[in-house]
Amino acid sequence: MYDQPEMKKYIRQLNKEPGHLFYEMEKYAEINNVPIIETEALEVMLQILEAHNSKRVIEIGTAIGYSALCIANHLPEAKVVSLEIDEERYNTALSFRNKSDLVSQTEFILADALDDTLSLDDHPLFDVLFIDAAKGKYEKYFNKYTPYLKQNGLIITDNVFFKGFVINPEKSPKRIRPMVRKIHSYNEWLADHPSFSTRFLSVGDGLAVSKKV
Image (cartoon, rainbow, N blue to C red; front, side, top):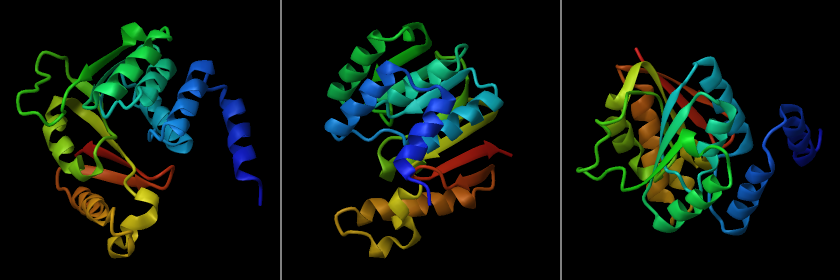
């Protein structure tokens, strides 16, 4: 069996990504225990967005701006609008964004994505909704932001397998069990949704890719 870390390093060299700024962001996330999308999930998502010819992306959960900036970097014609509730992470994301040449492609908004007063009616419709925020609120994010999608838009949800605990939520650690139950319920709800076709992908911590039927 090949060495996993070395294989990841080899794959990233082949893909010629990411640049110095993204390595800096990854290191910051590791040191400060900030969750960011796993490498394999990111690579698959970027390939999906490219094949889908996505031009406008709305992201729920900016964190430090890693995935938003990666998307903008990979898709030079794309615009990414990202919402973040935590002010410290929002400011960190702005700091990293200002080190890049991606300012015109990205818009970071400090807000509670589920605030009833928050509306994106003044924005053009989006091609993709990327959900990567509070795991227990996935269904609420899905329902609130899918109306802002174009016809044939995609919804991509990260961490839907949550380290495999969703297989049997009752065996997960007690401190995270309520959250795992909610992710499990979200997956079941999404799989049975009459208006969306969803494929669950075993990459990273699990991706769900949904499309309106």
